[in-house]
Length: 338
Image 1 (cartoon, rainbow, N blue to C red):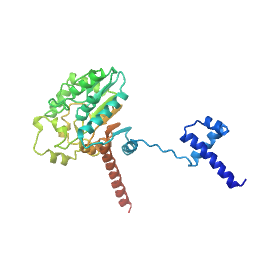
Image 2: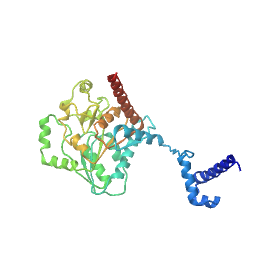
Image 3: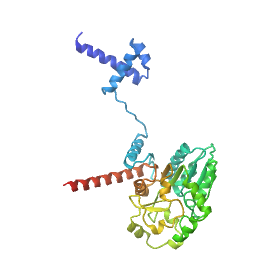
């Protein structure tokens, strides 16, 4: 028999083995019996085909592009984990609900009996609590990360914390103080109170922190709903733009590098500091919609969340900011070398 004929027979045998194994889902032992071969030989031929590139395995899933986007965001930002929901609608409420469902599911995956969960206020946090459904009861403590602002469902973090505790079967520890006070001396007085500091100590010892990331755009940001009347002024936009402020977490304002700015407001916050937030083992930031793109980028640059839950469109925007910054840095380096 010519060597070319022998090669063709070998290829035909290999093709039969690969077809039976990968397309007909037969086991290696079944293939060996069918073709009168030894099981080790079948295993050896399959491994060789993989090594030579004869077999290429492709995974195709409806959400595959989202998983790729998650990996890209993790690589750019250093996040431990990114979770992205598809952007299926331009309706902001539907997007918020989808992100809320993901946040609720992620929390249920990670909560354990004995945990303390520290939370912020915000529309996204409210969406998580509304979407959370479980029959299991958890021995947990729920505590706000900041004081509250009464009047709106999403600024009253004590109410959100109470709802979350009721759904999980845990105990809530409210903070009876405003999130933003009129002047720094008011903050110092409140933070010195044992009743407030005791609750914040519980928050400092949390295993999980769940918080929203907000924008500082006056027309859309709920941050301005936290402001006491004495702080209101005519031109917020100009004031925040001059400072470089792009986002807020726990009512603290920061710039695009994640650095705190605008101490005239940050010094008025009653709650955990961002450094104390960062020290909590699992910090989960949840934010959605286009105006959160730059705030999320700044929060990631500051290294505050370990996990981010957001929507597809927003995640793509954050990645674009990272790519743009890297390109700019590369161009500056090249110019310096010329």
